[in-house]
Length: 133
Image 1: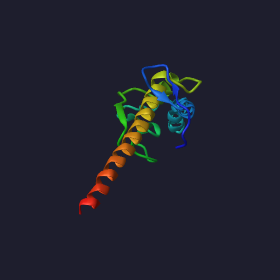
Image 2 (image 1 turned 90 degrees about the vertical axis):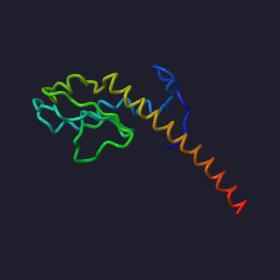
Image 3 (image 1 turned 180 degrees about the vertical axis):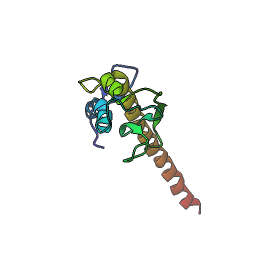
C-alpha cells in the first residue's frame, strides 16, 4: 500500500489516509453488490454479516470467506434482502457500516505497523545470535 498523508476521521482517534477514506465510503456498495442477485423478499436469517479488511461480507459466500480479522453479526430471521437494501439507501451508504469498515481498515494498518516493528526486533535479536555463536 502506498504511503500517503493521514487525515483525522471524525470519531475517536482513528487516522486514515485520504485513499482509505474514499474506500470506506463504498462499504454499502460492496454489500449491495453481494445482494443484487437475490430476490428482495429473500430471508437472510441465518446468514452472517461480517466486516474484514476487504469490506463487508454476507456469508456464507461462494466467492470468499471472512478473513481471520473479521468481526461478524448474525442476521436475525425475517430480515429480507429488501430490508437491507432499504437501510443502505439509494446513496449506498450507512454510517454504521461505513464506520465498521473504517475501524477495521485502521486496525489492519496498525497491525501491519506492529508486525513490522516486531520483525525489526526479531531481526536484531537473531543478528546478535550470530555474534555469540
